[in-house]
Image (cartoon, rainbow, N blue to C red; front, side, top):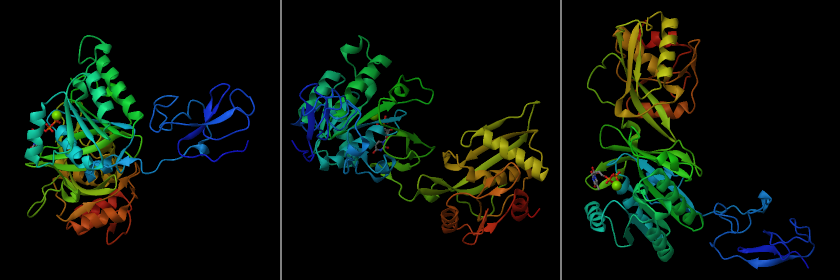
Length: 452
Ligand code: TYD
Ligand code: MG
């Protein structure tokens, strides 16, 4: 017998012990018998011998050399919505499950209906709704102006009905809206329990793991966590996407977990009359435009969210603490960062913060976690405390060390350019880049910015 070349759906199974592996071998690696491996054809997309997470049928019940595994290309399926695809890591991955969580009314159903309409050009789409009637969904589609033609709707909360419909229609794009409305008698008598949620999600996820399809599970999440469960589902799915909002009509999509891409990308949408539309150049979205001078306590910086730069305004307020304890009130920037920057400021400039209550906010409601905001945060705090405004058209970029040095940041050039393109002419930064004013340390920065 000679070794045969492996083809797409062929594997080799031992007639003695049933061990299956992708290459022909003279001796079965499992039972040790010689010349027992026979070529078998595996049904494509059928259930694997091992279980659901293989994606490569029948070969992963046992360890195989990684080099023998074929990397699959072209296994992504676009949602057709650029901002959504970017957050997913380029597009949704086939055989994967995506949990889309967000508070009620944020636009989860709208987003997925829009994606469903676009994805329908790639194959069958099944929208399983336990919340809204088919007529309500049709009315929404009409209102947004979607072509509803190729989306198939199933209104049910019963898991068994959903699974039967999946087997019958074999869709490539599946939406379950919402997972909290799905129940099965197999998981106890009471719908809506964490048990139900886990059982039903597990069954649906198992279904998609063996098909060239993508599953989106919609989950309601409230800020105070009063609606049970989505946390319990996070480990069952491959990707967790969170849909959030700021004070206006802007919606943010971000990945909290992604097996197939980074979790840095931010998708930005605007909710309008015609549903959600992508905000493709959001760099100035969070900038407050003012005529004339800036008030004291604000400073502008440039931050990265994934691959894109946003120019943002940090606002600070300091007031003498009423009691012996001082507090930091900051939703958008980590409290510890605010305290640390205030401590560095006090030490290096002699301006006192340790007897002050400090409030920090970011215009537009974005959350900032990059250390590159340190210098702008220090500037806003110093300006608030001294009541001296920085001149308009000024932006500050840089990380602060505890020793008060202004440290370099990643991708400085892109940050400087973004600020310049929005009209900022004086950019205080750690390095001399594209016309930025370099400052080695906080003291020099304060002197450049406030003339002190
Ligand atoms: P929805 O997608 O139903 O939210 P979720 O599924 O997350 O609960 O969106 C509901 C909100 O969006 C609702 O308040 C109305 C608003 N909306 C618009 O402003 N424009 C639109 O075109 C649509 C479809 C909804
Ligand atoms: Mg909904």
